[in-house]
Image 1 (cartoon, rainbow, N blue to C red):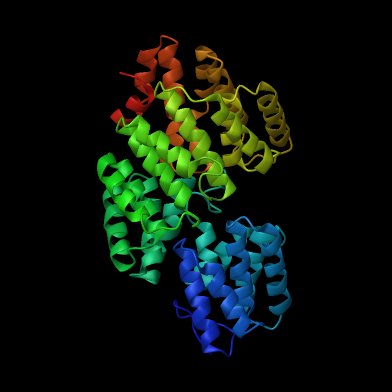
Image 2: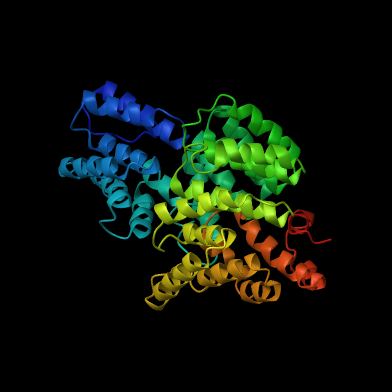
Amino acid sequence: MPVDRYGLEVSTSSQAACDAYVEGVDLFLSANLGSETALRRAISVDPGFALAHAALGRTLQLYAKPVEAKVAVARARELCGGLPKRERANVELLAGLVDGQGPPPLAFALAHLAEFPRDVMVLAPCTGVFGLIGFSGRPGREQEQAAQLEPLAGVYGDDWWFLSTHAFALSEVGRIDEARKLIDRSLALYPRNAHGAHVYAHVLYENGEDRAGLAYLQAWLREFPREAQLHCHLSWHVALMNLELGDIDAARRVFMSDVRPGGSWGPPINTLSDSASFLWRMQLAGQRNDASLWQEVRDYALREFPKAGITFADVHSALAFAGAADTAALETLVSQLEERERAGKLPAGPLVPALAKGFGAYAADEWNAAAETIAPVFSEHERIGGSRAQRDLIDCTLMAALARAGRASEARKLIVRGARTRSLAGVQ
């Protein structure tokens, strides 16, 4: 029986189908274009290849094709009855992520990985700042992510995907030197891994090397298709680094061409969070935004995330509504969040509606109210998901509110990440 790149048997009688599946998985893991094409080729060679159908469904989901994704995983489920235990679980986990059915995904995945740690398509959804741990809402989830990956280092060895994934987890808990060694090795093995380029950008950001990060990403993006999954988000990093280096015009150009809704394709959660956070950071930096830009992001949030339910999106919808001065939309969102909290359906807890209210107060120039609303919860903000680089915005908003309320000495006491955060918040 053929095996995948991780040495696991796959149930297909066709080596060509297996090779296409391996190619599709690698393209998926590296966020490159072509995964869908390769997986469909595997299915055309062997229509009964359940793992390929499941992987296709997950790929389509991340490319915002929910209807096609559900069709693919439904077919995978139909085909998996006679498969070995590992492959059945692989299908069940990926199908559940797509259609929301089946057992609790994180618990199911971790139990499976204890027996089959090299089942990479089951491990991948557990990792990263948008993964099952990253979006769990649990306090301490960054340390949990690093601890989950640590014992697997020996299992995966010199695998480019695992090295980049492990590097990101270490970077997020402040182990920058270790992260840099891993991501350097990963990129040496597979330079065109978009997730690897992303992790390298984070490592440089955390180390204060914005100029080096900007040069690296600008060169790397020249050969990366605009339609690829991470183009929008990598462009956000370019815009952010330009902003931090003081090149406001360059930052605006990148935002307009590659980050804003319609500028470049990206998953809705990236498009919303990158657009709203960039505009908010511009205002923290003392720059005015055209009201139409805020309205565009507000409209996108209302269309793509019409109801509360995904914490990271909810926080950035609140930014969009506050930035657009849409108090009605913001009040509706806060009401939905508080209702979910009362019902026990808000994993990240009361900090989410508190942040939404705080952003609204800040946008209304109610500096003391903003500070008093955000301060009690800001130390927990890892619970909303996303990276430390993305969540700097919360620290900066709180410090800027304190400074503008005449409480700069309090703002300085809150600085936990040095001159970078102080500069972004406008605190001297």
